[in-house]
Image 1 (spheres, chains in turn red, yellow):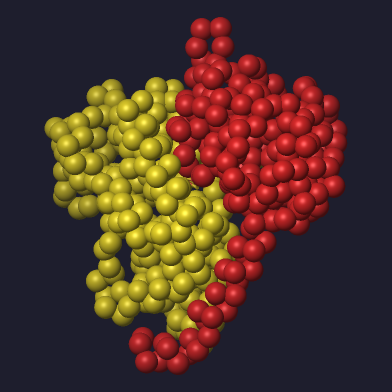
Image 2 (image 1 turned 120 degrees about the vertical axis):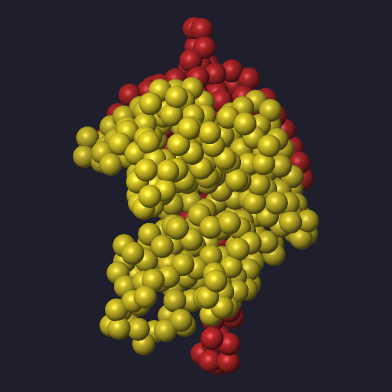
Length: 201
Length: 293
Ligand code: SF4
């Protein structure tokens, strides 16, 4: 299924989406990665804006100063898994509805997605110019003292995607399956390795 | 010196916005071999992205990494005394001009320096060429996702190549998903962790599709390649038969009591470029056919 979603994101829309679906986003998207998660959850600072019903993007852009504001040069996802230990609390405390990044996330995040009705989606890593094209403008920036990559960039996006749903509101996790499959294949690949090597190397 | 800085900063820009010819050719070959649903969609987005980056003259990926230079410099290269200074100045200039993402964080101050220069950064590995009058400079943009896969370990020699392969598969099946596959895999073999690790990075600098000149090392490359492909990680980890751009092994002779293994990955946006600068500052760009700086 392929679907366009507007922000603020409504629960009933989100609940119809399943792992593997592709969505495109219209509205407001806020970047938040390692340092923003830590400042909020570990150092206890209040977020400078409400993320309720909004999507966040694990990303640190390249930006350019243009008269009176900023423009996004290049913006792609960063590895979501780095935020795994903090994402449950982040979802619970902010009411954020969608986490966008690359690679999968773990079982704690999947739990939070089920409990608080949120999803994780991946944007293909490295495709940062395509992503930048879908950013209409920069609405603002907060916590810029964390450095450009770690600041909260508040963006207006149009048709932002493709976003592939990797965790849905039922708590299904596409990457659980991926990791299981990779591990079982690894087991197979390493079987009889002794014999194979003595005949080849 | 000013002219050298200008030349180097333009070279940095080229590396950030354009994939080298061998990487592009390898990605094209992989994309025509991939038949998974997601895989095909992802390759097509990658090619759109590569094209758009060139058209707009902006970095292919937002993570322009930490700059690592591998420099072979001739002792008769007229700029040998100012080369390090020029590389640093060019890094600052390119960070502003391109722009690159300021990625350099001082670990104790937890502060982003803002210009991609910091303690011991940009990283430079030197190699001296006696009596030559040119410099050959390889630049690698080490992105975060792809550097996170890096690992090294000293095995007891009894582990043999079996131990090497097991270690590689453990690492790749764990973090490899996040290294924006299809990735290039570099494996270094040596005596100590740091030599094996460095060799694994040097392995990433080799042309894609090249094989180690030692037939046995080339065979190890082949075996690891087959095994890693067998994991079916696929583009962006979503499954598929194309997972790697290649497997390159580099080695040194080792101590009889150790077998050190290093692992590095280079993501699909494998931005490593080469420039050969002659004594009169004319240059060659062997990996970017038709490009003028
Ligand atoms: S792994 Fe490479 S392509 Fe992916 S986000 Fe990092 S630098 Fe970009």
